[in-house]
Image 1 (tube, rainbow, N blue to C red):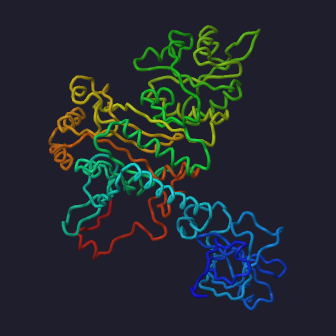
Image 2 (cartoon, rainbow, N blue to C red; image 1 turned 60 degrees about the vertical axis):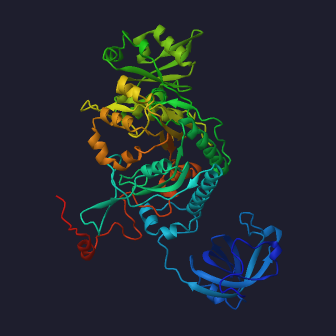
Length: 593
């Protein structure tokens, strides 16, 4: 054999190789002893080949001492299997290799977690030994899926005329957004770089510089508390920016890219043919959230008029307060007291006293509402509610009241819970939507001050005229989110490229020109020298792959993630710096009170 380790890979051999002398190297996936004959599954990056050693083999003694994850090299002869012994689960299942020589390249200690099979193991163990965890087939396939998705995204963006650029990792801190990761400067002692939370300003600078279509698979760093769908340290996004572009131009680029990605890698699940545009306020009213799962057909409706001045005093008195309303969540086929009671228990576990409900049943050739709430408001109002919601016999509805901001988060959970309990979710498909027309400003409930509600650098709809003449709380921004199956993949916006308009927006949010000039000097300067209208978006890579892989935890699609305490358990990061490193940086550690 000319190569010291292999003439073929462990996923390459077929019946056409019958009778050939070959060399393979890889890991011992498992060893099976069948009546003294050893069957060794040998694994490498490309697949698994069954290797056979019988007692007559000159290397049988060595083979008999192999354990899982030993790294070995074998020489042997390929033999096609009998038809009744073919393994259709393996690409190499038509053949096996009889060992003639075997060399152990590396031994393996007793494993802290198994590689063969997919038993559920504690995450801390998996992350400590991630190099072993990555040998497990399910995780390995998700990481390869991620690589394939990124390669496809690069291809698709290139086909659309976008050019990939790399933006800086060491940059300036920004007062907006999440906490920065700070990097002390040795040369400029006492000063710090920040790792970019996103390449937002740099990608705008790229377009302002005249590069018309920018994209990047961009690393982003945010010192945030971890969540299942968010890494505590870093994540990647498909970052794009377009010159001379409108909101619709961004949609026209992203929709076919997302459709092609989900059709290519979505395991054959259908992808929504259209990406409906839903106004932010409509999304909150219908779904209680700005990231609705449209596989769930349930939509809330405002039913306040049916409870005003009714005998249901809780809702009737509530509606006399300004800014309150009553919403109904329909529950088709949920019309039993048992189901309604179960949903009430769910509400109580979420911290509410319960949910009002009505369920409808047949009575004397008529449809009649039942339950305590129905008795209080009477037959006429109950029937009006049923007609508005389009419900029938055997259906139910649940009711929540108050200021919408006080119950919308729970309403979103209740809508999802009801749909899951009643098996209404359209499984195994991808449903996209755009959330549009976000309000530019919001009022702080405690201080009553007006501040930005979304991206402060977005262009307000109506431009300067809207900022000068409208109530700030009525001004909409050219801001948009793309959502799939209840997961927000990205936010984006048309940028505010007019400096005076930017100053005015910050003024309404309580910041004077000096604040803008001091904190966003680079952006201010760039807008003084001919900035074109431009827009962009940045779908998250991990969230895309999570949806495609059908998992809920971002660490399941990340090769070397931090744990939930933002620690790297393999390398021991974060770690204490040496005294010498601190001296060179002009830093001194103090104990936190």
